[in-house]
Each structure stands twice: as structure tokens, then as C-alpha cells.
Image (cartoon, rainbow, N blue to C red):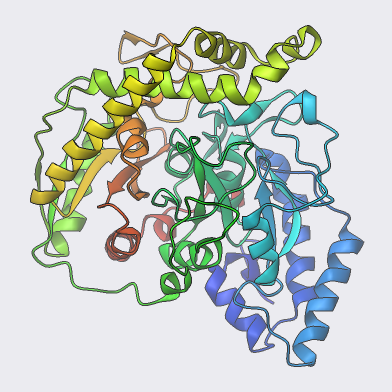
Amino acid sequence: MTTHNNVSELVLLQAHELAEKIRLREVSCREVMHTYLAHIERFNPRVNALISLQPADDLLAQADARDAELTRGIYHGWMHGLPHAVKDLSLTRGIRTTLGSPLYKDFIPDHDGIMVERLKKAGAIIIGKSNTPEFGLGSHTYNPVFGATGCAYDPSKTAGGSSGGAAAALAMHLVPVADGSDMMGSLRNPAAFNNIFGFRPSQGRVPFDDSADLFVDQLGYEGPMARSVRDAALLLSVQAGFDARAPLSIAESGAGFAGELARDFKGSRIGWLGDFNGYLPMEGGILELCEKAFAHFESLGCTVEQAACDFAPQRLWDCWRTLRHWMVAGSLGRHYNDPDKRSRLKPEACWEVENGLRLSASDVYQASVTRTEWYRAISRLFERYDYLLLPSAQVFPFDKSLAWPQSVNGVSMDTYHRWMEVVIPGTLSGCPVANVQVGFNAQGLPMGLQIIGKHHADMAVLQIAHAYEQASQWFKRCPSPLLQ
């Protein structure tokens, strides 16, 4: 296979293009694996995106087995033979799952999570994990086990999080597609910070059973990331679909996401929420980049206008903090209660637990009521608009040696995650949300835009994101300079 700028054309292909070459046996799974492993060895140290990589001989043997299956007429699906790294929050049988925590640095699960089962069934070969912050807390990927992940456009800056390893790996072409998970923008923020596509699906779209609780833990779930919307939709077609082990999963097959993305958007109405009338502090240049992107939507025949929201955004933040404290206290309380383990939790985790332990049942119920009222408010907006837009972050990628931005545009941040408040409306709505790219600031740092769709309208969001991608071509126009 030929090279471009000393990078193999195999790793530069979109995932669906590479998959087709494998299916047609124009390239072997062994060659794909060998090429990707060489590329990872060369470029992964620049960003520290992939971790717990498996022995090359084992991976090449698995690739040989995939080739042998093709010889016998066995084809598992579009991921047949594709190398894949799973986010280090998801269970992987026989491969370390550290959650970015020293408490789990040697934890090797004896089974796969539902999503990983599905990836393997579709033919993927799990090569290792992608880096994540400790327990996924914070939109900045660093932890004491593996260190920090750098932005693919400036490795001295953060890749975002918590799917920062996945996003940087994609932008560096270390993997064809990537999975992530999103509680507070973790499929959106790192996608924006690395100039790729990330998609938080509707609540229940991708079944999840890694958690101790399967009923009340409804803020975070898994989804796809990719260098193109087509690749993300194909990955979602594998991830999505009902599973009885996840009682709140949507009773629909994921197969439809492999369908046609092209459609006409003439006459579609889009509402721009911006900074919620000045409520959200934004680093200079972010709103302007997002607003310039309106022209791409308008070129599709859409109209974009300022949307007025009849819901106080401070209520969303208060609701979020209560629900977040409650969930983290529930999941990490047993570690916090052990003094030795507590000493190995990062301060932000302890802060979440301590605040959670102060909550009453009434506090949690009222937060759920507020979330319900927000769902009704955003549903009213969708009576007027087909889609809603928000920036994907309030700051550009920042120095990765910092724990978090202490201020945004002169406004002090009172918590470790306040600088990501802009993702809360999408999270609390339970609606599908995509990050699409909008360009770069003067320092060459990327930014993105959230597209929020109606309840369960995942395909519609993917379709408009695809149309926007065809109009803007941001990833093709601006690949990572670190690949030179």
C-alpha cells in the first residue's frame, strides 16, 4: 500500500472504505493489523491516546484467523478484521480495565460489556484501550495510571474528555473508529477538541450493563466517534439495539443506522441557543466560529435563527449537580468509606461523594422534577424547530498540565466541571446530540458545535450532521499537523 507524507494510505482510509477492501479481499486483515500497529508505535507517543495495548503477535494471530474465516466464506460484518480500542471505562474480558484509577490498575474483567460483545461479534479485533480520566470524572483526560492525553492539534493541550483517548486516537488515525461514553459531554467535548465527529445517542439507544444500577443511572451512556458521520453511523448500527440485560434499552434494532444518510433539508428550521443570552461565559472566538458555521446549514436550505428558551439555565446546573453528586456518591461511596482507598481517589471524586452524602431523598426527587420540566421545555422548542444548536465547549483546548480552567472570559469557575456547563442541556434532555466541527482559532485549536435533535430522532441528527459534513469538509481540509 502506498504512503502519503510517510503515512500509509490504509490508515488514512475512512473506516467504511477500509472495511470494503477487507470484504472484497483487496487487503488482508493481517496487513491492516500490521500497518495500524506500526502507525500506533510511531504516532501514539505524541498524544498518549491508546493504553494497555495487547501483544502484537497475539493481534496478528487474531488477524490471521479473520483472514482464514474469509477464505471459508465467513464474514462477521462491516468491522471484520478492523483493529479497535475500547474506552477504558468499558469492561473487556482479559484486558485491563482500570477506569483511570490506581484502585483498578490491575483489574482484568472476566467478561465483556454488552457493547464490547457486539464489537467482537461484528468482527472487530480489540487491540487495547483508549485513555480516560479517573472514573471518567472531568472533561480532561489525565489519570495517575497512564498520564495525560494530548490534543491531536497541539499535544501540549488537553484532548478533552472523558473520551479524550478515543478522540485523539481517531484524529491521529490510530484506529478506524472509536467508542466513547458521555455523561457530561464526553462524546462531544473531546470530539470538538480534536476536530472529529462524536455522537451522544438517545437515552437507551445503546444498552449498557456495566453499572451496578440499571434503573436510576440514566445520565451517561455509550456511543460512537469517527472521522466521518458515515463511519459513526455504522458503528452505532453495531452498538445500538435492545438487550434484555439493559431494561431501559430502546426496543429497536440498530441496523437502520447503516442506512442512507443523504436527504433533503430544504425548509428545516434550526434554533441557535448560543450562550443562553449571556448566561454562559465563553472564551473569545467560540461563538463567532459557531455562527460562521450557520452558512453551511443555510447552503442546505435550512433557516437558522436565535431561539428563545423559557427555562432558567441556572436551574439546569443545580439539577445537574444534585443528580451527578447522587450518582457518583452511589458508585464510589464504598471506596470513599475505606480510608486507604479514599486516599487514592482524586480530590474531585471525593468532593462529588461528600456532596452526594449530604443530599436528602427530597433533594434528588426535586432534581428529577426539574429535569422533567426541562424535557417539557425543550419539547416546546421542538414544536418550532427541527434542531437546536449550542457550542460544544466554552473554552478551546487548554494546557494539559492544568486540572481544569479556573476561569472563562474572566468568570471564575466554582467547580472542576463548571467550564463544561454548555453540554448540560443536551445531557439532561435525553435527546440525541452530535458534535460537528466548526473550525479553528488563531492558534490552530479546534472547536465544535452541538446539534440537538428531537426525542429518539437519532437518525435525523446523523443525517443533518452528514449533510453539514459534506458542505464543510472540516476534517478533510484540516487533518492533524502531527501526522506530518
